[in-house]
Length: 133
Image (cartoon, rainbow, N blue to C red; front, top):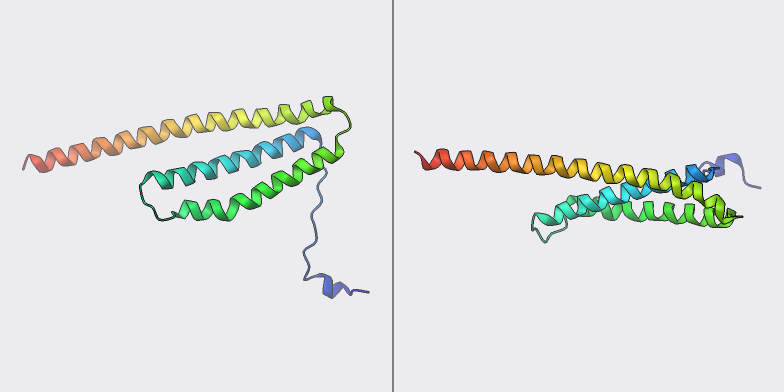
């Protein structure tokens, strides 16, 4: 028999009991994080550097762990599905989070564009100042 002291060194699983809408919300939140990680990774590649960026490293470290969570939730969902109509709650909750993510993408794209324009204008002002000397 294993003593309680020996069990302290082993990770004990965390068990969740989610209702279908909660599972959809969790899947949506995980998809949001994966999407944000991919956007960060893509931004790192835009700079034209062939070297892996810090965002590549973050993506490579976190994405596989999040994908495993998505897979585990998917398996649990599949194992507990009794009737297809119950899946509407999952899909509805997932869609709500996905739509919020899409709104976030639009918002951050607008912010990024604004920052890029301001930076470009600042560079133009500096160049004009140097040329006028």
